[in-house]
Amino acid sequence: MITLEANYSKKIGLPNYSSHQFSVTLKSEIADLSQVQQESTRLYTVLQQSVDSNIQQIGYLPGTNGNGHQKPQPENERWNCSDKQRTLIQKIVTETRGLVCSKKW
Image (tube, rainbow, N blue to C red; front, side, top):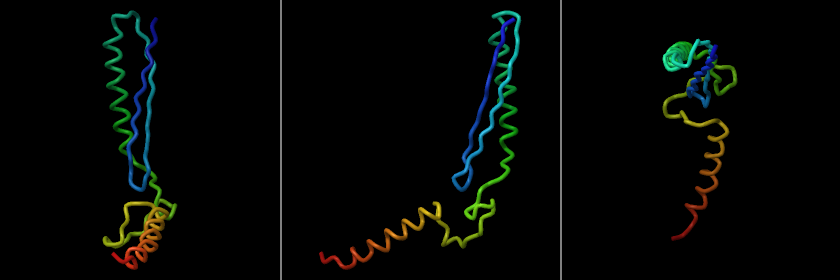
C-alpha cells in the first residue's frame, strides 16, 4: 500500500487587522503508483471544497474596544489605522504644524 497525505490551507484578511486561517489534512491509501495522479486530484478537490466552505464562517472579530464590537464613528472621523497609530499621527501633525507655520521662507 502507498499512503498519500495532502493538506490544504487558506488564510484570509479581515477588518481591524485580523485574519482567519483554516487547514485540513487527509491521508489516503492507494494500491499502486498508477493511481497517484487521480487520487491526488481527488484529495485536492475534496480539501479545497471543505476549506473554502468552512472559512466563510467568520466568527469572532476583534473590535477597537477589545470585545468584538466597534463603536460606530461618523464617516468624517473614521481612520483606517489603530488608535495607537492615529495618536502618533496626530502628535506628529501637531508638533510639525508649529514648525511649518513659524518658519520664514
